[in-house]
Amino acid sequence: MQILLIYDIPDTKIRTKVADTCLDYGLERIQLSAFTGDLRRVHQEELLAKLRKRLGKRPGKILLLPCCEKDWKARLEIVQEVPAPAPAAAEKGAGSSSPASGDEQARR
Image 1 (cartoon, rainbow, N blue to C red):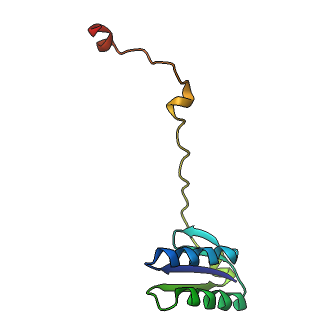
Image 2: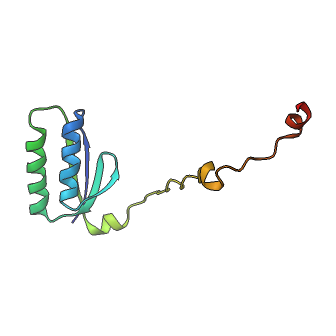
Image 3: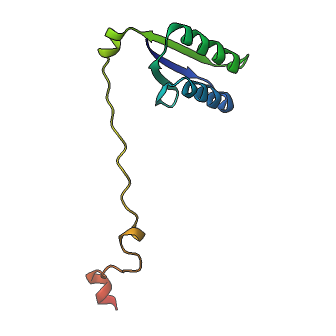
């Protein structure tokens, strides 16, 4: 069954351990504090027990939402990838200088 796991944990160290545990279960990170994946009910309960232990008595909230296949397939999402950075000037021809503008040439 598809699941959505989201959390709000102020402690960075615990938050990182929770994220690592989610990755260990094969979940895919879809946001900084949100994961999704396919887990059987027994594995959902096992994961939540591990996360409860990681959180301990520290403040935080972890929510695991199971979703049936029909509803999962009906989900709507917008995904926009971050464009690749432009090549640095050094990669375009290090050492070459651009021609001076007309004003710069007039001042010389």
